[in-house]
Figure (tube, rainbow, N blue to C red):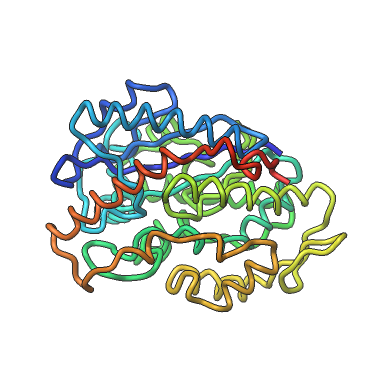
Length: 364
C-alpha cells in the first residue's frame, strides 16, 4: 500500500511572531500556501517504504527551511499557534469560505494538522478502520494551548470538533461508520447541499460555491474519501515533528493494509488472522475524547492502541513537552514557537538514518 503525507507549518519571524509565509511555496513545487498567510503545507508523493518517504520529506523540508532562513522566518510544527491568530483568508476560495462562515471559522485559522493519504483499495473497510483509529491522534499531540489558554492535549482537535454552531460542526466532527461507499457519498452530497444553504443565508450564491468547491472538498472531517486522487485520507492528528509523523503514518499503514485480506467488524478492538475488530461508535467516541483531552496519559487509549498493534512508548508527543502556565502571554507563546522551530530543525537533520535498518521497512 502506498501512502503520502501533508503537513501544515506555522511561519514566524525571528521574534517568534506569526508572519506571512507566502514566499516559501516558490522554493519547491511540493510546498503550498494555505488558508491563511502564516500557514504553509508540505506534501509528499505516495511511497511504499518508510525510507523513501523520509528521504523525500527531508529534502522538501530542507529546501523549506533554507527558504525560510533567507526570509528571516522559521517553521513551527505545532497544532495551534498557542495564542490567537486572526489573519484574513487568502485566495478566492478562502475568502469565499470566510464570507460563508464569518467568525465561526476561528478554529480553521488557529489549527495546523497532518493528513495521511492511503491508497484506496477496500474503501468501506478503510473508512471504518480509519474512523476507529481516531484515538491514534494521541501519539502526536503537539499543542495543549488554544487562544492562549491550556485546554486539551490536542487543543486543535478539540477546537475543530467542539463547535458552537451545527452549521460548521457537521463538517469537522467524526462521522459514524459507513455501510457502503454510496451511503458515504450520500452523506457528503447531503452535507454539500446544506453547505450551499448556509452560503445562501449569508448572501453567497450557489453558483459561486460550485465554482470554488466540490462536495468532498467541503468536508474537513477526520476521515475523507477522495475520489480524484484516489485515496482514503486520515486528517485526525496535529502537525508534529516529521519523524513522529512518518512513524505514525507507517504504523497506521501496517494496520490499514490488512483491510485487503481481513474483514472489519464491530466487536471491541484488536486484530486476529481473519478480522480487525473495532469498537462501537459510542465507545470509540469515548476513546477519542480521552485521546484529545488526556493524550497518552489515558490508560484506556494506550491499551486500545496496543491492541491494534501500536507501541505508544515509541512516541514522545510535543504537547507533553510544552510546560507553561494555564494562560499564556504573547511573549511566552513566541518563545514556545521558537523552541518548536529549533526542535523541527534538529528533527529534519536526523530524519534519515542510513545506518538504521528499520527505516527501510515497508508499510506492512
